[in-house]
Length: 312
Ligand SMILES: [Zn+2]
Image (tube, rainbow, N blue to C red):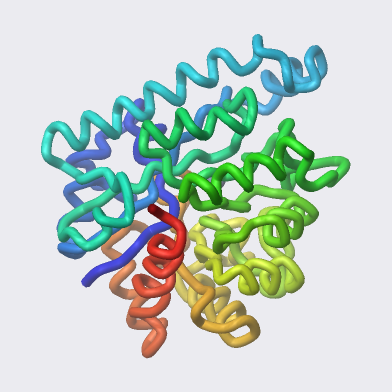
């Protein structure tokens, strides 16, 4: 089979487990076993992964001092280095532009999860040179570009954030609103001239959760020609999460906003526990069965359309 997974935490997890030959949720070897034409958005996750630690920094600096961003850029570069190592050792091909989408094999799209690491919108010119082709506006922290889904004051895109979207459009970098606040999602969708994605999020209409998207957000993303990557984060699925809930969220978005706006963003290696029946990338084949006639569109055609409409 062939599929696109809009979110996996390969680089971040490589510090704690074997993401090349391992058997937990996802690895290069497992992915290769599932199909011969696979695109995975490999997350770049430059955060100090402790909310309390970060909160202290925020209290001191309101999150925009160069002091708080310098270690983040180091984490970012280390993760890019890891993906380059994967390519150099023959495990993956890194997508550098739309021309790479048609080659067979396991391909990685480097995707920044949260713009906190950027000093200003023009840092995207540097990231484009490093083949980062997707930029998430926020993770769970507010930043100088946009408000996050955890924001206490959902201010949406700032002037810097609007410029970030504009520069991303210019450079052929996909704009991702996963983890964004509602106002950020609405602002990004109305600002962007290219399709906007939520790489890993589910529908609030099925499960009310801060990380999920309400109908207005889903409609706004659909209007840009974008996609929502249905995700395996248990708390966003249901009380007793299973593979059937992934299908349910997909169906909700598909039937209300059009199946051309549904995709998959598992968050494998980024979640501690997985939904029952959807423990690892092998189970994407089972999900395909549940999606029935929509499987090829959801798992391949829709995300490929976004990639081809955006990347240069
Ligand atoms: Zn995430």
